[in-house]
Amino acid sequence: MDEDFQEVVKFHGHSCPGIAIGYRVAKYVKDHYDRAEDEELVAIVENSSCSVDAIQQLLGCTFGKGNFIFKDHGKHVYTFYSRDHEKALRIYFRNVLPRTDPAAMKRFLAGEMSSEEKEGFMKLREEATDYILTAPDEELLVVRQVDIPAPGKARIHPSIDCQECGEAFMEIRGRTAAGKTVCEECYQKFVL
Image (cartoon, rainbow, N blue to C red; front, side):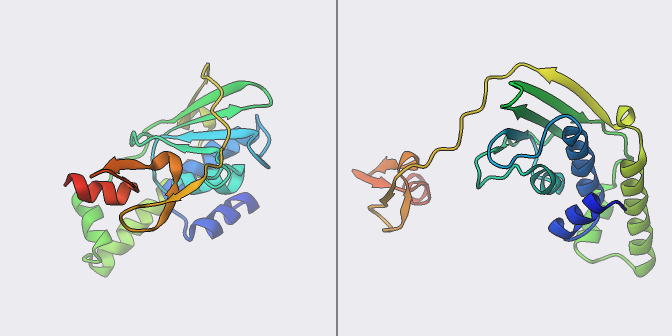
């Protein structure tokens, strides 16, 4: 296990196929672009799996800095826009692994497997992780340059108080309900 992968595992909390996927994607990007100290590199990720932790840790793209954009498409697709190069790479992680039986995954997560079943399940996960870490890029990644508009830079917006719950929220996230300016959470209570 190389040092970068060890750091990703430490950040994420455990080794798994998902973190290995993100590691391989981030490692490929590091060969082409510098790690973001600020907003030089923007990651646009299309899933909320373990993989995105590797991208945050290795590439310095985070929600807090505003250079990490989440699009909930449920796909292992990652686009990286370099402000320095004014270019973007779109990386699709091929579905090369055997699909996990949903019933087995459910039983594993619920802690309902026998010790033998759990051992077999963990062995399969470890084999998948090892494959992801060692397979050639061409087997795992579909990479292409794409033309996208430069993502907007992070902006700080003033906060206002919700006229329903009293909690401060970002002004541009305000909604109007019953003649009041309210936060999204309170707005949902009005419309349900």
